[in-house]
Length: 140
Image (cartoon, rainbow, N blue to C red; front, top):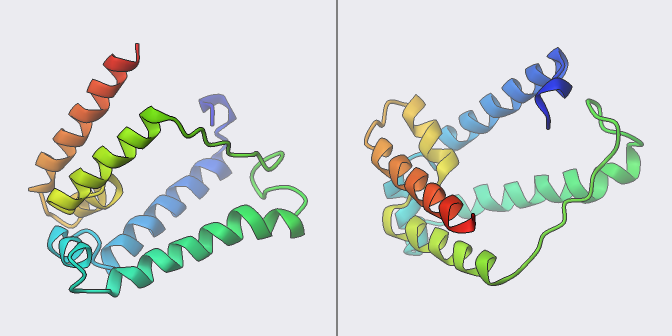
Protein backbone atom coordinates (compact mmCIF):
# COMPACT_ATOMS: atom_id res chain seq x y z
CA UNK A 1 0.00 0.00 0.00
CA UNK A 2 1.45 3.35 -1.00
CA UNK A 3 1.76 6.06 1.62
CA UNK A 4 -0.49 8.55 -0.28
CA UNK A 5 -3.33 5.95 -0.17
CA UNK A 6 -3.12 5.71 3.62
CA UNK A 7 -6.22 7.52 4.82
CA UNK A 8 -7.00 7.89 8.50
CA UNK A 9 -9.44 4.95 8.52
CA UNK A 10 -6.81 2.75 6.85
CA UNK A 11 -4.16 3.87 9.33
CA UNK A 12 -6.51 3.17 12.22
CA UNK A 13 -7.41 -0.25 10.78
CA UNK A 14 -3.70 -1.05 10.39
CA UNK A 15 -3.00 -0.01 13.99
CA UNK A 16 -5.93 -2.05 15.33
CA UNK A 17 -4.99 -5.12 13.24
CA UNK A 18 -1.34 -4.93 14.34
CA UNK A 19 -2.33 -4.52 17.98
CA UNK A 20 -4.74 -7.45 17.77
CA UNK A 21 -2.06 -9.58 16.05
CA UNK A 22 0.54 -8.77 18.71
CA UNK A 23 -1.95 -9.42 21.51
CA UNK A 24 -2.88 -12.76 19.94
CA UNK A 25 0.78 -13.76 19.69
CA UNK A 26 1.28 -12.85 23.34
CA UNK A 27 -1.81 -14.69 24.59
CA UNK A 28 -0.86 -17.78 22.56
CA UNK A 29 2.64 -17.67 24.14
CA UNK A 30 4.18 -17.65 20.66
CA UNK A 31 6.42 -14.80 21.84
CA UNK A 32 8.31 -17.24 24.07
CA UNK A 33 11.02 -19.09 22.11
CA UNK A 34 11.02 -22.03 24.55
CA UNK A 35 7.31 -22.65 23.84
CA UNK A 36 7.92 -22.53 20.09
CA UNK A 37 10.88 -24.90 20.40
CA UNK A 38 8.83 -27.39 22.44
CA UNK A 39 6.19 -27.25 19.70
CA UNK A 40 8.82 -27.90 17.03
CA UNK A 41 10.12 -30.88 19.08
CA UNK A 42 6.56 -32.29 19.13
CA UNK A 43 6.36 -32.11 22.92
CA UNK A 44 3.70 -29.36 23.09
CA UNK A 45 0.87 -29.14 20.56
CA UNK A 46 -0.77 -25.97 21.88
CA UNK A 47 0.62 -23.87 19.05
CA UNK A 48 -0.92 -26.28 16.55
CA UNK A 49 -4.30 -24.79 17.50
CA UNK A 50 -2.92 -21.28 17.01
CA UNK A 51 -1.59 -22.11 13.55
CA UNK A 52 -4.76 -23.98 12.63
CA UNK A 53 -6.81 -20.95 13.65
CA UNK A 54 -4.58 -18.72 11.53
CA UNK A 55 -5.08 -20.98 8.51
CA UNK A 56 -8.88 -20.87 8.96
CA UNK A 57 -8.93 -17.06 9.27
CA UNK A 58 -6.70 -16.70 6.19
CA UNK A 59 -8.84 -19.11 4.19
CA UNK A 60 -11.96 -17.13 5.05
CA UNK A 61 -10.29 -13.79 4.30
CA UNK A 62 -8.88 -14.78 0.92
CA UNK A 63 -11.35 -17.32 -0.44
CA UNK A 64 -14.74 -16.89 1.18
CA UNK A 65 -15.09 -13.15 1.92
CA UNK A 66 -14.67 -11.96 -1.72
CA UNK A 67 -17.62 -14.17 -2.71
CA UNK A 68 -19.98 -12.39 -0.31
CA UNK A 69 -18.53 -8.88 -0.20
CA UNK A 70 -18.30 -6.92 -3.47
CA UNK A 71 -15.41 -4.72 -2.34
CA UNK A 72 -13.17 -4.50 0.72
CA UNK A 73 -14.25 -2.17 3.51
CA UNK A 74 -11.19 0.06 3.12
CA UNK A 75 -10.18 -0.65 -0.47
CA UNK A 76 -11.33 -0.47 -4.04
CA UNK A 77 -11.01 -4.10 -5.22
CA UNK A 78 -9.84 -7.49 -4.01
CA UNK A 79 -6.38 -8.16 -5.43
CA UNK A 80 -4.86 -11.47 -6.44
CA UNK A 81 -1.76 -12.44 -4.47
CA UNK A 82 0.43 -14.30 -6.94
CA UNK A 83 3.19 -16.47 -5.59
CA UNK A 84 6.17 -17.51 -7.63
CA UNK A 85 7.98 -20.67 -6.65
CA UNK A 86 11.56 -20.91 -7.78
CA UNK A 87 14.94 -21.95 -6.37
CA UNK A 88 15.38 -18.69 -4.43
CA UNK A 89 11.98 -19.11 -2.77
CA UNK A 90 12.77 -22.70 -1.77
CA UNK A 91 16.22 -21.76 -0.40
CA UNK A 92 14.76 -18.79 1.51
CA UNK A 93 12.00 -20.95 2.99
CA UNK A 94 14.55 -23.57 4.04
CA UNK A 95 16.81 -20.97 5.67
CA UNK A 96 13.84 -19.42 7.45
CA UNK A 97 12.76 -22.85 8.72
CA UNK A 98 16.25 -23.74 9.93
CA UNK A 99 16.59 -20.40 11.72
CA UNK A 100 13.17 -20.78 13.29
CA UNK A 101 14.00 -24.31 14.38
CA UNK A 102 17.34 -23.34 15.91
CA UNK A 103 16.21 -20.36 17.94
CA UNK A 104 12.40 -20.63 18.06
CA UNK A 105 11.95 -17.05 16.90
CA UNK A 106 9.82 -15.76 14.03
CA UNK A 107 9.94 -12.02 13.11
CA UNK A 108 6.37 -11.14 14.14
CA UNK A 109 6.47 -12.84 17.54
CA UNK A 110 9.97 -11.42 18.14
CA UNK A 111 8.69 -7.87 17.75
CA UNK A 112 5.67 -8.66 19.95
CA UNK A 113 8.04 -10.22 22.51
CA UNK A 114 9.93 -6.93 22.73
CA UNK A 115 6.66 -5.32 23.80
CA UNK A 116 6.46 -7.89 26.60
CA UNK A 117 9.96 -6.93 27.78
CA UNK A 118 11.93 -9.89 26.35
CA UNK A 119 14.89 -7.83 25.11
CA UNK A 120 17.00 -10.94 24.42
CA UNK A 121 14.95 -11.16 21.22
CA UNK A 122 16.95 -8.18 19.92
CA UNK A 123 19.71 -10.67 19.04
CA UNK A 124 17.32 -12.71 16.92
CA UNK A 125 15.94 -9.57 15.26
CA UNK A 126 19.50 -8.44 14.48
CA UNK A 127 20.12 -11.80 12.79
CA UNK A 128 16.86 -11.52 10.86
CA UNK A 129 17.85 -8.02 9.76
CA UNK A 130 21.31 -9.17 8.65
CA UNK A 131 19.77 -12.02 6.69
CA UNK A 132 17.38 -9.63 4.96
CA UNK A 133 20.26 -7.27 4.19
CA UNK A 134 22.37 -10.09 2.75
CA UNK A 135 19.47 -11.22 0.57
CA UNK A 136 18.87 -7.66 -0.62
CA UNK A 137 22.53 -7.19 -1.52
CA UNK A 138 22.63 -10.56 -3.28
CA UNK A 139 19.52 -9.77 -5.31
CA UNK A 140 21.01 -6.57 -6.79
